[in-house]
Length: 108
Length: 113
Image (cartoon, rainbow over all chains, first blue to last red; front, side, top):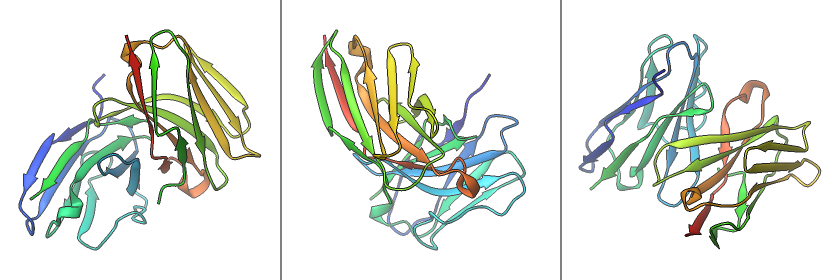
């Protein structure tokens, strides 16, 4: 079946703008994770959704970062007032081991 | 923060040779996983080893886990050019953090034809 999809695949924005990144998990998967990967680094956990439980936001680096998930479907990661250090690949995972292709964010 | 540390950071071998990558971690785990990443994008899950397991095989992959030393190794036998990628270990502490992975920095493997 279809895997995890993310959009856009690439996003270039100017410093100070807000961006929204989207993740479509595998249908029926209750868990959804967001990770950030800076160039040449491993992945850093950002946020975790599990069903209707309160999300685990312990990895969000600042209050400029937020994420939502509607039920057990689509999730959006929002970064407000983007900074150059936000440039990275943002990866979404559905039920732990199924990763999406990522969104490459470049902040100029 | 990155719990895992992997070595080597980069490994270059000839096709047909074996490749061994190591991972160390700091806290107790429920399981440890290895992933492959091509071209800095999506991750492919390779293998999961639970904390009560010592060795696991999958095709040309062999993973060992030593919880007393908090270390794991990934062996790729008879390597192929197509194995060229970055390899990451990731630990899962379990409990309320189940599924929340802590990744190492990765090993860049280059297999020359």
